[in-house]
Length: 209
Image (cartoon, rainbow, N blue to C red):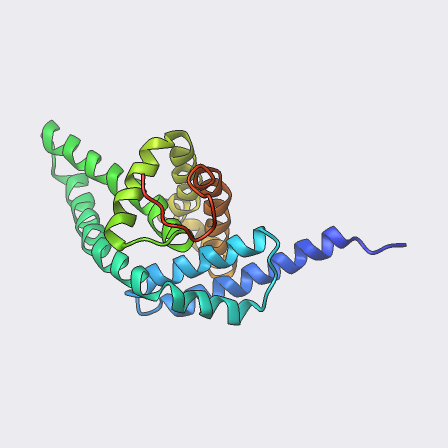
């Protein structure tokens, strides 16, 4: 009887994703490195989905190093906006009743969500400056709205379950520690690659809309 190569390939991929998830968590502990870590995680998952096998740990840290500069700059730019959005979300939930500020809040929330959906995948895939990456992430999200909404919706499901269902905290905690971030990267790769192929003549080329 021949061994089931697909089964062993799948289990090998799962093992890689678990290891990548651990590496992502460890390298994200300083918080300020989170942008670098997700760029490296995305690029690592992207290579595995494309069938480019390599040593997981060596490959991850190589990609982490190559994404360090832009990943750090992008995250430091976005972090204050995320902190402000968190503060206003907590404030608005209990205090804001005026329609105009509420609409403005939701517009800014959507813009930030659109940027976050693409900025680190773009960083991991194309060569560009941080400001162009931020601009292109928003333009890409708007130009491919169905993919953008699908990406945000699917990624948001486990996040919402984690935040709004504390009774299952032990299960959601285990999910994020073992596979959660890697699964997020897999979903991101599968959706964003359908978008990026419209702009990609050769991998690693400049990207500007």
